[in-house]
Structure formats: C-alpha cells, structure tokens
Image (cartoon, rainbow, N blue to C red):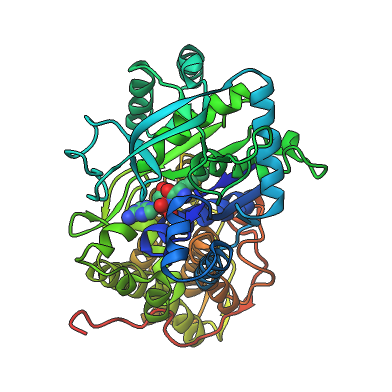
Length: 510
Ligand code: MSP
C-alpha cells in the first residue's frame, strides 16, 4: 500500500471561490479519491491563506476586523467545496493556533540553523500579489499581473538566506527528475535557480496581521513565508500530534503556474534549511481562461467578466455537481492552459455524458428488462469487452499516477464507446430471450460496472447511482481497485433497475 499526501494551494480569502480555484480543488479531490480507490494510505489537504496586507485591506474596506472578515470568507470556501462534493481530509486555516505553533517552531529551527539574518529591504511591492517586483520585471512601474501601481517599500526585515541553496537545489533537481512536472515547468524552475538566487525578506513591520516572529516582537512573517508552511502544519510539525515521519516527504503539491517559484524554489530551500527533505513532487497546472484572460479575482474586479457569473456553486446547481466536476477534470490537461466556457460544458455534457454514458446505461437496463426478465447475467471470461476493460483500467492507473486524470477519463470513455459499439454490432434488442442475448448483455453489464468504478473519483454520485441500478452491494469506490475492477468480480445474476435518464440532454440553443 502506497502513502499519498496531496495538497492544493491554500486560497486567499479576499474574495469568494471561483471556477479557477475550483479547477485546482476538484482535480486534486479526484486524484485523492483515485488513490483511496487504489487502497493507498491517503491524506488530502486544502485550506485558506488568511494573512497579509491584501486581507487586512479587504477587512478594512468592509468595515470589519481581519478575523471577522477571514472567518466569513473562509467559510465560503468550505461551503463551495461541500457543494462540489470535495472530500478533503483536513481544511486548514492559517489563522488557527496550530498553524502559528508550527510556523514558529519551523522558522525558529531555520533561524537556529543560521539561515535567517536581519537586513534592510527596499523594493517595489504589489499588494495583490503580496510580492516584490524588480523594476525590469514590472510593467513600467505597474504590476504585470494586476496592472496596479507598485508601491515603493523600505523595511528593516529578517531575511532568509535563499542564495545559500543554489547548488543544493540544482543538485536536488538533477537527482530527482520527477520532482517538478510537467518537464517544461521543471526547466522553468531550474532556469530560475541557475539565473542566481537572491535572499528573501520574510518579515514585515508595516502590518500586524500575521504570525508573530518569535524572536523579535513587532515583526510578523511575510504572508507567503507563513503560507507554505501550512503543508507541515496539517501533519503536526513541531507539535505533540506530530505525524511528520508518516507523511513527509511523501507529498504531492498541485499548484497553478503563477506560484511555481514559491513551491519549486523557496519551499524546497526552506525545508533544506530546516533539515527536512524537499517535497516528493510538485505538479504545476495551467490557467483556465475566459476569452484568453486569466479568470482571476483581481482582473475580474477591473472589469470584463464578473466572477460572480461563473461561481462554481451556481454552475453545479445548474448542470449538476458531477457534470461540472467531469468538465473540470476532462476538458483541460493538468499542465496546459484551457478555455472555460458554458458552451464547452454543454458540449461535453451532451456528447460524453448524455449520448455516450447515459445512453449506454439506459439501453442496457432496457434490454435486460425486456430480454432477461430484469436479471443481469454474468459476463463471459473471454468476451470481447474483457480485454478492452482491462486496458481501460491499466490506462487509468498509468494516467492518474502521472497527474493526467483527463487521460484516465478518456480511456474510460473509450470503454463506454466500445460497449455501445458492442451493442450496436449485436443488436440484442432484436434477439429472442436466451443464451445469446445473455452473453451479449452480461459483457455489457460488466463493462458498465468497471466504468462506474473508474469514473467514481470524478463523478462519485453518478457512479453510486449506476452501481445501485446494476443491483450491486456496497459502493463503487470501495476498492481496492485491484480486486474490484477485475472482470467478473461481482456476483451474477443480479436485478437491474430501469430509471430516469442519468443525464437528460441539454438543448444547445437553450
Ligand atoms: N494563497 C496563495 C497560495 C499559497 S499556497 C502555500 C494563492 N492563492 S490564490 O487564491 O490566489 O490562488 C491559488 C490557486 O488557485 C492558484 O495557484 C491556482 O492553483 C488556482 N487558480 C486561481 N485562478 C485560476 C485560474 N484562472 N485557473 C486555474 N487555476 C487558478 O496564490
């Protein structure tokens, strides 16, 4: 049994969850569910990033204290993830006492190890990014992402000696070719390190909304520096409920491409400085775009698409939770940018879910009802679909293991398509009841059972409903996959239920 610890970035709570943040979260949830299905010892962490100037400003604008503001907005993330059927094992808020304790003990360790020192910091700062820019990297003095003016900041700060880790980081990259995926992102991170690393300022005195620096009162840690440590907070670093040895470094961080530098350069260096192993794996995905623009909170605020129009919760209420999850996982490879559109959801829904999967389930139940007295027959050991199903299971294993769930779904829907083609080739609805129709339908039924298992990480409710209609006991995601997806693993004959269409077609012109 493998050990699998998966994280999403922790989301800023200065605004509501949107389709972009849902993209990361739903994909991560599906990956975690896949590993649970395989029987891996799995832990899935998400949460909210609640410190920093941006949050303090948002609270002030809304006339409440930062704590009241973050309580309110963090709760919206929990609600959104519940609405999207996200089954996290832990939801971490950086304002929790457990996080303060871990941050302080982790950073004290780095301080004691001699990698933190005091110096003067001057630079151009973007409050939306919570990050400094050099003049060259700026857009004539404005933030290249948010297009707002950068502010000149000068502070006496504590610095992290990032520059000391250039060689060790490069060596780590060389020894661990799979550390950062996809390859293009690995190259980007390595090039950044090769370009030379500057020490980073990790504390602030200009604000008090942050984790206090234990050895220097009046300073709080810079929001990014406290945020990254959340991945250790959840496993109890520096506390009595310490599970670090169990989970570290078996961790996989799923992140968006704009936060590559923090996760692929800073974070491994911080861990090295504290005497811990860098994370096992960072997978970097692209952005969902609307008409070519990043679907981000700050850009939306500047005009154009309003984020409220594409709330993932509203989408789920309209299209159903599982179809939205399916779209978010299937449409865009984790690594590429993708275009988000309502037309895209409708097209996927109609082609894959209504016409292919939904149609298959309906047909099979109808023919078993009329030709097999409602009793689903056993499959043939050497039936034509057995090998197709085994290939789909193998392709899924390979795809999910390399964070390519869209490829897993593609393989599963090839099995759906092959099963529909099997029915069309044999036309069991024209056959008389008897062994011939039973053979055809036993194979089709078993293929659907395997499909229900394979889609369960992405569409848990749909999979459970198919399972129920197939007359199966337990749940499709019970696993372990090894045994449950074996051809012929379920008892037969079983009563098969006919019911309403799983995915009523959506009119494209609606
Ligand atoms: N708080 C930091 C992360 C700290 S992790 C230690 C942060 N938060 S964020 O809310 O701005 O964005 C977090 C993540 O949301 C991004 O990395 C990305 O994974 C996801 N996305 C936000 N907008 C997105 C799109 N338009 N498309 C795809 N993912 C998007 O950065």
